[in-house]
Image 1 (cartoon, rainbow, N blue to C red):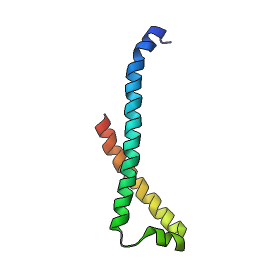
Image 2 (image 1 turned 90 degrees about the horizontal axis):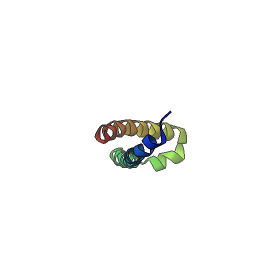
Image 3 (image 1 turned 180 degrees about the vertical axis):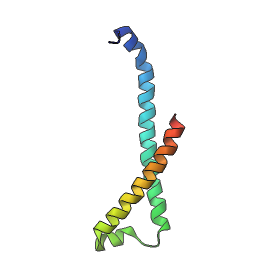
Image 4 (image 1 turned 30 degrees about the vertical axis):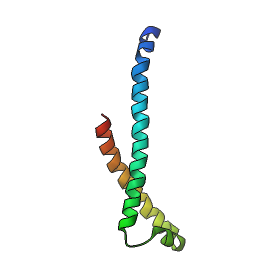
Length: 82
């Protein structure tokens, strides 16, 4: 068990690490949204129009985009935060 005095001395470092984690999460979400918007502009079709016709196909396509962008941005942001 960790003594209370040692635990109290660790609080500032824990707060810094928590703030880094929160900052990286917000940056990751922002990168995911921006990446999706850029990819949506590069595609020759409008996903909003196709979503009305066949929501399953667009849902699978959007899930693949979000997964790919989140993995790439997570690796980049994770490397930058460490």
